[in-house]
Every structure is written in structure tokens, then in C-alpha cells.
Length: 367
Image (tube, rainbow, N blue to C red; front, top):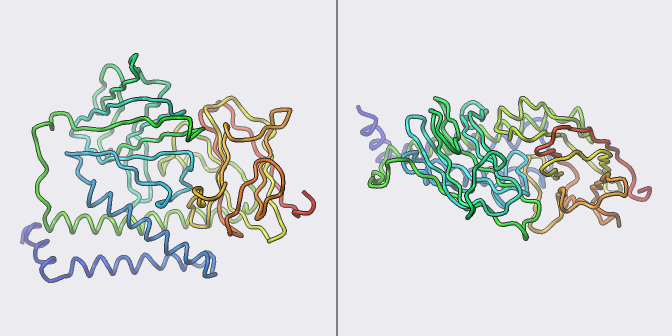
């Protein structure tokens, strides 16, 4: 039986949908991992997290999955979060295949940092996202009107060129803001070269089956990968040491970022103090507070992060950040937004030096 006929048969007997539902049920077991929080609050966030991953997976694998007709889509934002998503970022991605060449065009505008990578995205199957090529605004030629054109290909091209490898399957765009209100996002689109007169094939049973399988593999793979990573933070609870940079890069980290990751836990009367006595020259830096599932906390309604532009600096140029359940009456307050535990991330972005951070837990009354 051909793949097409087999897919038709599974649609007709309902097994495609049954297998999709069974895979989602299996993904729910991740919320009950042995070292994960056992209270209803954190488990509720865990199940919401799976629904968010599912929404992103369905968009990615069903609606925007065709590398012949790629589109940049924002797959991580205020209500779809994963992997310590940066509240200062706009993330966009698109499928590609290395046998084709692509062109990215648009306006640079005024966003502080613009970086574009090709990757081998295996979040759903291998738990990695290897970067195979990278270009950022410091290397881009931009014309007098702010226009950009970038060729994405395996063979080197003149002008702005973003390399691909044989197994590259995705383009990832990061835009990092220091001032969301004052900066304008880059406006970009991607197209396959030579595709102007072509049209996609109609939807069919095989595409549905492939999309549903891809979406559930994404939910299971991404959730399990980041759950495992969170558990590795527990030995450094309430510290903020440098992360394993090689691992960060292997799961899609930006080559220009040096990461600090760990876990935090505070009693109701405690605060977590981070001192950064040495701020290096850099594109920007930021700190953010996340929940156990490595989702950034609700930055729509709470101040859960701070960056180079928004921070208050001491007279000597140092920075102190205070994580507290209630307003401690000091600058750079980071709200816990109803959480008593979670994860956290500090980034030096575009820095040549990566100074260490000092942390301590103390009583709110002693701050």
C-alpha cells in the first residue's frame, strides 16, 4: 500500500486522530516527573504549558510546514513560551530545505539587535537545534533606505549571505529590543527563489497525518528536554552560575549570547538579590524570571525582567536586581507573580567579557 493510500485508510477509520490523542495523553506524564513540583499551582501551569506547545506545534507542522512556500511566523510570544523565552525578543522561524535557495528581504528599522540563523531543528526527535549559519545586523549591508536582502544557500553568495548545511531545516530570526515602545521591529519576509509562479498542492490525508505526528513529537520532545534541563539546575538552587555554553548552543542558543541559568525558590518573607558589579561593553544584557517549566513569567502584567536600557545603575556603574514577592521599595524589582519557585536566566549579549554574578537570599526585613 502506498503512503498516500495508507494515510487515506487511517483517516477513514479514525486511527490518525486516535493516535494523535494517545500521544497527547502520553505527553501529560511529563507534568508528573518525579522532581517536578507536586502542587496544583505548578501542575496547572505545566498542563497549560503543554497546550501552548501544542498550539505552536500545530501552527508549525500543519499550517506553516512547507519549505517550498516558506513564511516567517512568530512561534514564541506572550502566550506560547518555552526554553526561557526572552521577553525582550521577537522570535520568527520558517521551514527550509538545503536543496533550495531562499531570499530574505525587508526593512532593518530600529530594533536594537537583529540576528538570523539557519538551524537543524530536532526538538521533536533528538532534543537539539544546531546552528548551521548565522548573520546579525553588525555584518549586514543595509541600503540608504534601510532595506535588507539576504540570500540563504549552501553555496557562498556575494553581499549578505546566510549559510545552510546539508541538514538545515529551519531559519530562526531573533529581534532583541531594549525599548519595546521606542524601537521598531524589522519587517522581514522569506521566499524560495524561483517559486513566484508556483502554488502549493492541496491539503490531503498524508499532510494531516504528518502534521499531527510532528506536532505531538514537538510537544513531547520539547517538554521533556526542558524538564530534564530544569532538573539539572537544582544543585545550584538560588545561585546563578554560567550555563554550559556548548549545550546552550546545541539547543539553538544565539552565538552572540553568554547564558547564566539556574533555579530559584523563596519563602514568603525572603528575597533573592543579584549583584552585577561589572557590566561589560555589550549590545545589551537582561535578566528574567521563569516558572519551573522554563516559561517566562507573565510580562504583560508584571515586571519580571530587566535589561540594559530599563535598569537603574549604581553610581559606580554596577547593578543590583531584587526578586521579591512584594515591592521591596528598591530599584530593579523583579516580581515573582505569585510563584515561590522556578527558573531564571541572565544574558550578556554581544559582549567580549562575561563577568560573574553574585547572589544571595535574605529576609525582606533585612534588605
